[in-house]
Length: 542
Ligand code: GLN
Image (tube, rainbow, N blue to C red):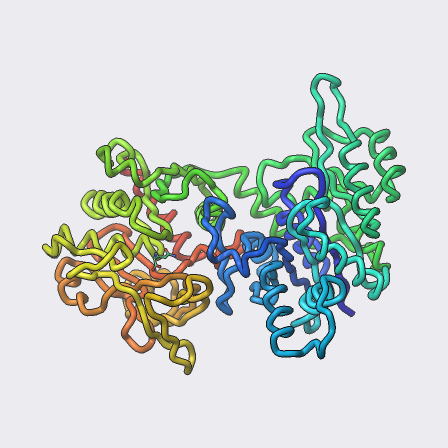
């Protein structure tokens, strides 16, 4: 029997609803249940793919090629369950489906309305593509009280009624602020937020209250009384030192027990949290530290590189070291010498990116790493820039560039207009829509035997997730290889370069895909483990 837990948020945004949902998923999993997490996003974009990373944070790409909300990254990192297209929907996508149906005449002359047509489409989405999961956790984006989330809240209210309490539960995340002038925690915002939910017909059974100070019993009773929940179902969620300590903190507060009790499930056995204990122990007791420079364009919003910074933490967990991140805006290197920013770091990472702004600075960072034997990890755009750097400074192609920056006679990186996915040929051109038209999702890659990456992966063939429009131009392979660069990973048809490395450099690897999307704290990605290992070596030299 599949049960649904609907997770809403109130009072303010940024309370960590995604993390809370992910942590509850991990706790239920630790109790032996099969879980899947989903997110309903109330904005009008069909998916976050067209949004700037500085507005909405990272776009998380799934194996099946969906561009999704970054919370799906948290879900995967906490549960290890690969997210799918069917785990994230937006108002924009729901409306496109409803409007397409209307145009086809599927509504047989009826007036098409938010209720029931839009809410039906939401309910259908929530219940689709489920097999033998014990729990589906459904997070509703935004904050209760927003106009745009109303159809979603109405849809989950109806679902709660249709499924009944034995198959559904509502959990609400709120803020209990500490007012220093009064020296007290304040429960009123939580009371108001729950009142707002009640006004929409939703009675939460569990309240997760974010707070900076411990919750006095009298405040717990007050929240319970005014919000119609049991005192033990008021979960005090205090800040913790690592996001990976959240599952244990919630367990200590009884969150999983409250959920199980609601569904009449046995709680006499403790969940197996050994994996989380070990992760947190390694984070809290590192045996050393390394500093990695991330040279990118969206460094002012850390959420723009969420999976990346987590994957670096995972690399640290694997090596038992703390990883300090030095975020550097690549444009700085277009005005100032890179040396003073980079000479003390133990590794340089140039992440994914789009557009010409800041590209020259990334090329400088790659040059610094190559010439000075500093570990370099180029991801997607970071690989493309490393290739342009080698072409310009080692192969003598002075005007080497990417067609992403405009027409160029020496397109080391060019727009890809045709490629194969499975047995299907996909085509694009410069005039295609921007949304959903990149090379997206999991693609296979064949590794060159005995190359560094083959050693690192311990495999000859891998599958990694992609999100890009441009590709390194295979026609320059020979000239680049003369500089010492090796093409060590290729698409199975041998046409698309997927990985480059320098065998005579301590660690210089560029990948056309996004390995950070598949890294987990309990299964750090091999490339990140190896990169942090190389940085640790480097730290012994400088
Ligand atoms: N802008 C580049 C492309 O589209 C790289 C994209 C990326 O780094 N994800 O190919």
